[in-house]
Length: 265
Image 1: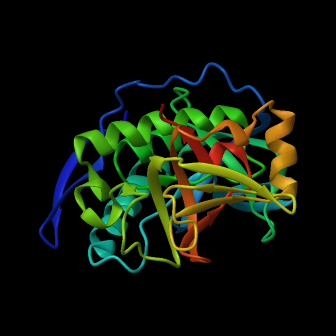
Image 2: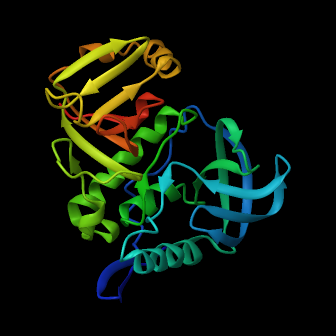
């Protein structure tokens, strides 16, 4: 059983390992493919594990759908320490169950895995409820990954881990000095939606030339259409979007798939 430990590192209080509260017992793994059990032998980094025997020809396992603390934050050392301690105490020399989606490997040959302890607790959920990462999905993520937002929300509400640091808080889409070239989570009300040359732009103020914008290009729109989502009807809706912010007529996030966006109201 996982136990909890409060640590103080560089003046930051962190929950390094949280007691297993059974907030998620993974009964429904819809969309996932069972790749069998694996013994975890090493932590390569905060998202890569080593297993004792190859699965699909590799011993490297990528912990999918989470984003560890960013290197540019002043408290990164403390958060990284807590995240590594969690992984070591809960996974090293433990046998876990490995699942992948239809896309089983990344470009580095690692298994893109959802990982479950033998008691069926979801490792990604435990990491997130400790505040040791943010949710980060991609176009290959299965829909069950959307449940991870619940655990991120739980940690954020409690101010756990990274959520105790202002650098990780939700950013208003109205923010005038939004940082770019960073992974951010941004929330606001859509003021207008337009389709130009096959790309949809969701704007969050009336001045589209320098406001925050969500860009959804043709390939992504096909995915939205397959899921019967009409993004052009989102004017007036409050959205929470996550991704890499670039400077393109003001700060912009390119959305490649629906799981990047949470509908708030």
